[in-house]
Length: 92
Image (tube, rainbow, N blue to C red; front, side, top):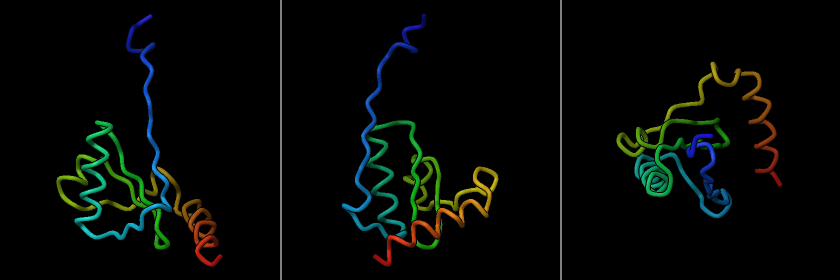
């Protein structure tokens, strides 16, 4: 077997409730840059009350912007279902 297959990787997940993240350029850029220091390549996924956003961390760190999650990846009706569920937690 290839040694690449046998290598273990550690993934660090952050508690989303620990930090309020607005979608302004500097916040997004900082988060992406910090993620790249720990895991390169990586992708940044952000869930907000307005929708879902996803892009390669390198592009986010470079440009300070993040794209909406593509409906080619997750259909709009499914995104709406999850967004409605997410927003239920905002009212609690």
